[in-house]
Length: 498
Image (cartoon, rainbow, N blue to C red; front, side, top):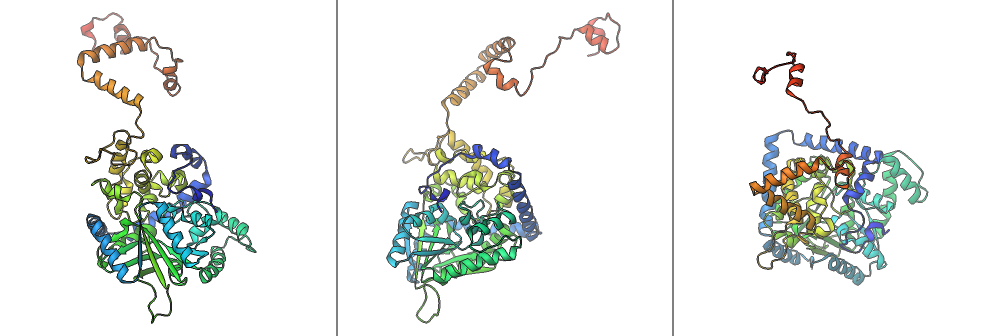
């Protein structure tokens, strides 16, 4: 199932946000689906943080954990690799998504794997991994229920936590009836879940390999932490004889003690749960005395532009994200247009600062402008990412890039891509006029005089006049003013009240 997932690795394609948004806004069913879902998620999250003081304290701790990890990122990655290797996990480094795909494909081919069962992983979506494996004759099946639904539909996720949030029960029932053999139409959620379970349980039992994402990678102990609610992640990582985990380099944390506060923030912010159903800690392949688990575990650490983001002190805050999607759930733009409008792996507020930095401003320079800057995302972010500040920074980088002192290259990929010479010329002229009083008076008088002679239908005025009409009025004399106020017809100037 290629569809949009079959795009060349890392390539941005198709219409931009502004071109896609009208279709989403004119789809009442889509807007109802999102409104119902987001109202519920916001209410559940608010119920989990009733005490502002507790929320502020826990949030500050989570932000400090991630900030400390980022400050030591190169050192922690090396320590993570050393401890994972000591535990029997094979670590691979990938600078690009193409390299990551080649590594995963090579591991699977060496093991003779033809079928793969996948746990939820946004990094694998970033890699377009499913399509890459399919092109090489390896079938990858998503085991997360939401991911499985959109895989059947040939779509990409519209939300990083709940991939099929844009679909309602009736749409899923129609999809299952069409794609799953002998599955009747039903509006019963339990029956729909059972239908997916029947298919996926067989896949778990017969898969040659399992692939998963990683929520946190602990450098201190060489542990991969994976959280989920359905049990599919645990089945994907223990039943097949081979487990491959893929993750971005920013997911590393320093200590095992850093994980509990992040878990408390992540689950409550994401789904409004006090705790997630399953917390999996993977520290190596099956030992000789153990009865289950994979015989080989691999970790692929993906850069794909993250090192470049890390080099800027302000923009590096983007990498603190723990993928809870709270910013999406509270964003007035995302909740009205949905994730597919962004035409990116990471939608919503976090996507609007992450995608332009990973893909470049030439490909996604319009994303930072798809925001009201209302600050709702920053207020609910559990690790205190200043998203509105970074959106403004990226808007500026798109037209006036900051350069790296050593190389004189733009700090942000494709910096200045949105710059227009016409707009620059206009602002240069504005600056010239407004910094010279005599020139300012001459220009404004000339514009005032010339404006009275420009017809409303002229090309330069057409866009203005179609939205508003120029005021038409008869000049008022002193006697007109006197009559309006009830004074006699003939008055001297000094008798009229000022």
